Length: 284
Image (tube, rainbow, N blue to C red; front, side, top):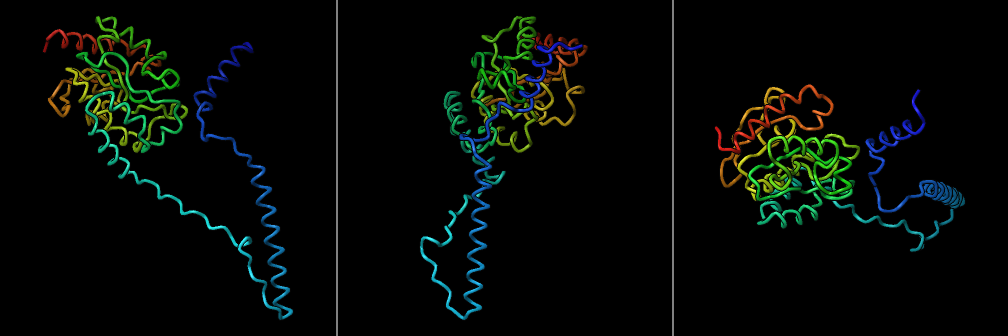
């Protein structure tokens, strides 16, 4: 039988995965007060309507509406930004960045992606941008959202061990995600969210200018490399990637989070990392 402390920890973990830590507003709203106000307003409107009907039946002229009683004019709502406009704004903003620090600042102020409002903070990158290899995943998780750096949770620890096995660490690699904000409840980013963030990660790769790009997982591979096949069929293969300045080599492999769920697939990821080690050493 499950102990109470263990059950409580699992329940808390469930609520975290469901997005209980995601704030949807800056201030609490008393919904009950709104309902009472609406009911009172409705009662007042009904009484006014009955008085107006009675005056009309008696042949009396209707009372003039005082300015204080006139219905308030609602301000015109701002037109929502269309998906195409958001993507265009992202492209225009990304191409103005001349350094990675400028790109980080642009992303921190960019309002075209709704994930910015629910995430704790921007998760831009970690590691050494001067290194020869860059790893790119899909999106941050709970731990990354709290710390502000990519791949710091369980999957990040596994990635560190995988890199260490071929002589790499975070001082000799650069790590980022396609989407730099955590989706609520760790859900998969929508195609629109990915499309809005794509110009920024492309510019980030261009500015970092690595020799080798490693796509961690199918979503990163499909988004950056345009590959239609799944990761199981495409992993271990080398693809060309145009950074905007030159063409580099790109490798697709399993995401560490997938390997934690499917340990038997680690042997294939090991082969991929050996191929990465060989390429870094100058092999074909």
